[in-house]
Length: 189
Image 1 (cartoon, helix red, strand yellow):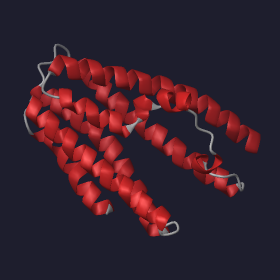
Image 2: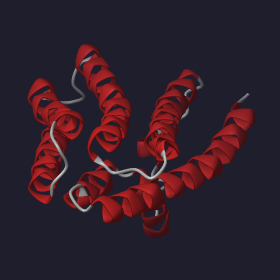
Image 3: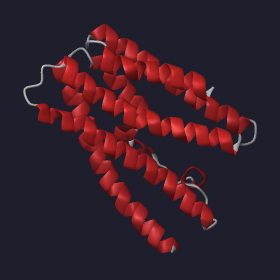
């Protein structure tokens, strides 16, 4: 299931870098990313229903997620450079910065669970620390929201505005999360 997910996802990502931007392409990319995301989610659900899956399966899932997160934003940078009429190439710092933010956020979440597990503390998903407000605040880092943003891929100005706002919100989210994560790690140490 992970490889099926990766096939859909990386096809959508490649299209961003290789095909001129248009609204139909944006809709196709959204569909490919969303289907890939659904397969990835289904993979996790099947593992939970079967009693946890395997270490190799979890490892593969995390490797593919990490590759997806960084390559998505790099493909946006390539697409912007190749197909958008940028007034200033400094705009390319937005997707490149977003790649850094999403990678650090993903690594931080994985590392938090790893280090908490070494101390016998339940993983974040097991401790039930979420709330509706917390879920809303996390939307800028939600991959499903990112997928939906690509419907604007052919409307250059709209996409750049939505994507830049998501990048800024993700940066603010990461800054807040890092402070909370550090405080929690310090308390465990």
